[in-house]
Image (cartoon, rainbow, N blue to C red; front, top):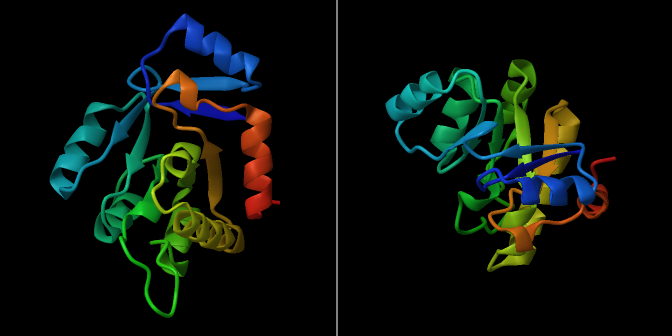
Length: 173
C-alpha cells in the first residue's frame, strides 16, 4: 500500500511509515505536487510546471473536478466529498456521478480517499456516507481508487493494516 503524506520529507517520518507497513511513501513537493486551484488557466499552468512529479488535485468545485478529470494530466483527484456543504433532500451529494466516473476510468485517473479528512471532519457521518457512495460508483464504473492517510503531521499517521481494514469496510472488495 502507498502512503501519501502532506509534509516535508524526513528520515524519521519515512522510517515510521515503513514501520507502519507501507511499501512506498510519497512526500509533498518531493514526490508529488498538491494543487488546489479554482481557476482553469492557473491549474493548467501549474500542471505544466511539474511534469516529472505525480500531480494530485484537491477538488474545490464540481466544475473544476470535471475539468481536472477531462482535460488535464492530473494523476490523482481527492477531496470531492467536501465540495458540497449540504446534501439534497433526495440524495447524497458526493460530487461524483456516472459521467465523471466514466471519464476517470477512460482517462486512467485515480480517485483518492483521504483518511485525514475523516479524522478531522466536523460531520463525520455525512462525509462517510458520501465516501461510501463514491466508492460504489468507482467500483461500478471501474475507476482506480487510492485510500491513503494524506497526513499533515506525525500524529495523524495510521498503519497500512488499519487503512486497508477501514477501506474494506467501505466496500472496496
